[in-house]
Image: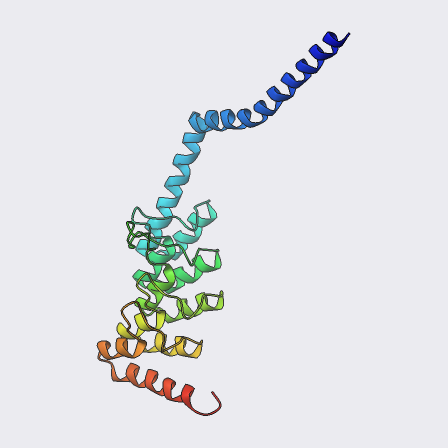
Length: 221
């Protein structure tokens, strides 16, 4: 009687183990079969094509084509081989309306490109960094409204204010100061926004930062 019970128990145990293994193996096998199927390759190729169309539309500044491609299923965070997203391209090229459209469609504000140092695992630039570097004040304002910190730094510890100041973008500097950017923050090399302003050679930017520093040191601040 015991041997019969033991045999039944062993059979049940083996069946349970096979069931557990099957639950883990079956999804993996199914995934491999799907990825290898002509159907999946066709779907993937179509998606890649839509993403390329989006990048091309952004590059050429065709906002209506951007809308059509997004409606057709292009991924809003499509990237180039160098890691630039559609939003980064729009910011760099100065297509503010396209950039604002992409932000409204949920484009990532923190997507980093490949301009960083891979060996030292330092990230590249994001669309926010490019907005400060190129002085896209309207776009940067929309990004700040989405919760981006006005004190965001790049891989070298430079703040958005430093980037905007060094590149001579008065309105962007003014915006960042109004939104709480810290002009006393230091980069990895010890530079401040005031140093960046001096390098720009723009007396108005230098004045803006100096006056802000005086105001924040005044009693009551």
